[in-house]
Amino acid sequence: MFFIRKVLGAIILFLDWIFTPKGIKREKSAQATIDSKTAKLALYQFVSCPFCVKVRRAMKRHSLNIQTRDAKGCEVSRKELASGGGKIKVPCLRIEEGCGNVRWMYESSDIVRYLESY
Image (tube, rainbow, N blue to C red; front, side):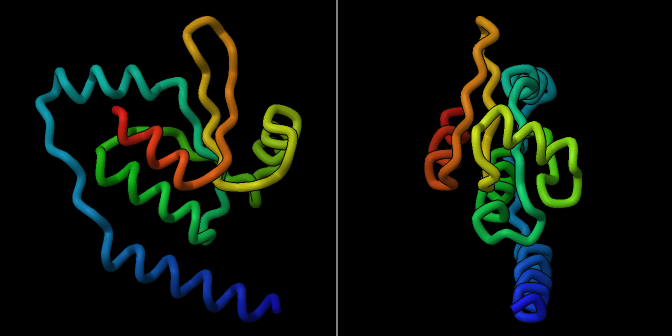
């Protein structure tokens, strides 16, 4: 099973690299506004997870600069995900709202839909 996951993960990353979407070109001021809006977002992910790739591709398509955190390779990120979100499941978008509240969004389709609002 480990071997199959390793091979499939490599294939997913290779295809993602080949078919990387182009981002939206914006004026610097418009991009700066969006960057400030997305500054309090963080995506917890596994690098070769197909659902995480789906979210990262949406981020690229919309030219969203969102911090990514590797919940598989980084023990600190993994603990943050477990304690904040309540479970180790990826992809997970950490949304820090204006009043200091933090929401955790887990489903890739919900995350993509949320990101499309930017």
